[in-house]
Length: 363
Ligand code: M6R
Image (cartoon, rainbow, N blue to C red; front, top):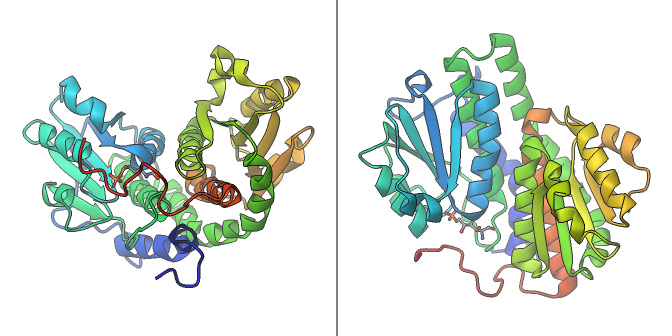
């Protein structure tokens, strides 16, 4: 049931405010205490967190790496499951392994989990399908409560994965004494405001549609982001190529001059994901390098970013202000909308893109 939407993907994008609220309410008691099933989790007993996943779920892990390291001082490795499973990575004691999967059935992710079975101190998973193999084989499985996701392109599962990982990172930071009470409370309040902001961001659908008419003509598209926005650039590029079949690549903004800038000319739109945060000026200078070579920049930013960096850009999508830490959750929405509208402009099969399966149960 598409609930009046043209595609499941559109429905799933639109559902995010309510799904995110459900996930937050599931894990937070009235007084803001974090609730976990069973014995809970002792983050002080961990020296390292190893996160493993595939595709979009691996980008959720990459965002979470920035969070766990900054908020909790907990070192994190992130690996794609197909690489992790055959590399025989050593798992030192006091390492927790965390697997993220919408379906909970992805063959490589499950194999990576089994590899960690007798090696990691604890096996955690963040899944959408609560009865899945990955959930069943974990010591502790945390549901994201996104509801069934039908569109092959993952949307609401990604944002719900991010919210659950954000809550875990906050809890880790609190337990490990890495932030004071006031900072914790402030960050939690900011996280609770995300569903409302996501609702606002859905209003960018029309603007995304307008921009998409031009994106649909491109042969190649670059995405740039810095810091916690780098994984969002990766997610934007994956989403776009999955459903519009346009070649899209993402780079950490700082990598631009180490190679990819050679690709830039006036036929290559460059999508820059950059809230006005502590790294904004650096991203803007990368953006200027792109514009100096004729690149058409689409800047995805907030009001302040739009005020100071509009000069010379081709188009802007302006999002509401958001706490810098949680911006990746909000910026997932324009990444999804751009892919969706570009696919529509190209006339591709949005919900069932060619060559792809919703759940990859063979390696
Ligand atoms: O079910 P999983 O989360 O384990 O799936 C992982 C990837 O196959 C998945 O995220 C894929 O990249 C999506 N089609 C992305 O939109």
